[in-house]
Image (cartoon, rainbow, N blue to C red; front, side, top):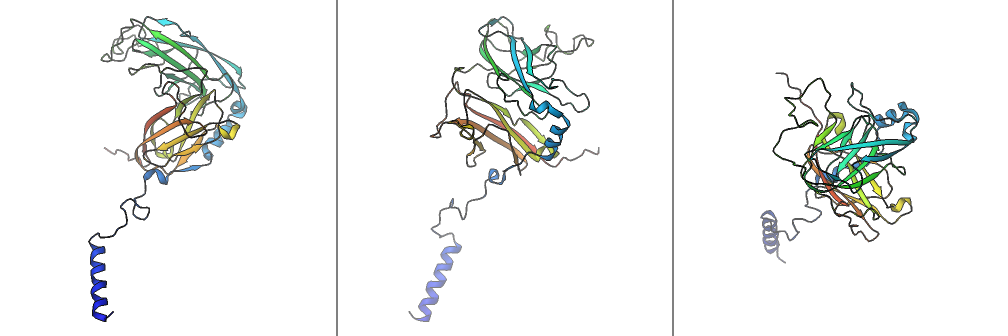
Amino acid sequence: MSFYRFLFVLTATLSMLGCGGSSQPANSPETKQTEPAATILAVERPAAIAAMMKERGEQDTAAPTLKIVSPADGSTVTSSTVKVKLELGGDLKGYKPGMNEGSHTGNHIHVILDNQPYEAYYNLDQEFELRNVSDGVHTLRVFPSRPWHESYKNDGAFQMVKFTVKNGGSDTEKPATTATGETMANADTAKPTPEGKEMKESAAGEVDPKMPLLTFSRPKGEYKGADASDIMVDFWLHNAKLVGDGGDYRVRYTIGNGEPRFIEKWEAIWLSRWPDGKHTIKLELVDKDNNVVENGGYNTTSREITVTKQITENKN
């Protein structure tokens, strides 16, 4: 090949590459942008949590159990305010639900209506109110938790009942109410308002209590400042063992559009290096062939969380 012909071919090739003429696919590994979820890594239990566990003494080796006194399994409630009453038992070793007024944290019970995010229940001496519950069949799930929301996973800790609300008179437009139906603005401020929450309209899935069941617990809500460094993933397993515990199942978790990852032992994990912003995390209970184990739609659950590492103080 002559020098001039070589120069012509070289010039034409460079021109084609500069104009995007490369045959490499846009989504190839070399050109694909890094998915935010790819930066998120599993880490060891945070030192702050380990220190808290040490301060609590033997509480974290306790085996608390629960009994749902009301609503009774299979019962019908004729009010949109469903009162939850629990009894705590088992080998407590000092474990007792209650909120520290200074830190606004403490041992508590996770209360889950249908497949909505849990609500924290601190004072078991008083009933917890599920307010504005719509007519229909509902599932209630409860289990004890530590101040940082890590669940106890011993036998008897998890309890579940199904109940029906009939002619309850729920109204999604009404303001927050007390147990008597008064608005908060008109209520007697001398009487403490029971713990509770206005519930979104929902209905129970067709849950089989004899089948494997995954209950999504954490993460939930907003994580700011130091709390956004290491975020815990936790869940409750009923009638299932993961492969790392001698069973046949795994928990698959997916962050946004990232690659699925797996949890093979039933224990909380912590994920670090979250980018700021909103993230969706999905938990699924899968069998040995990576197929989702169906049970009322609850074994696949997604939650959206918000991460804000830098908190800007308002100086105004």
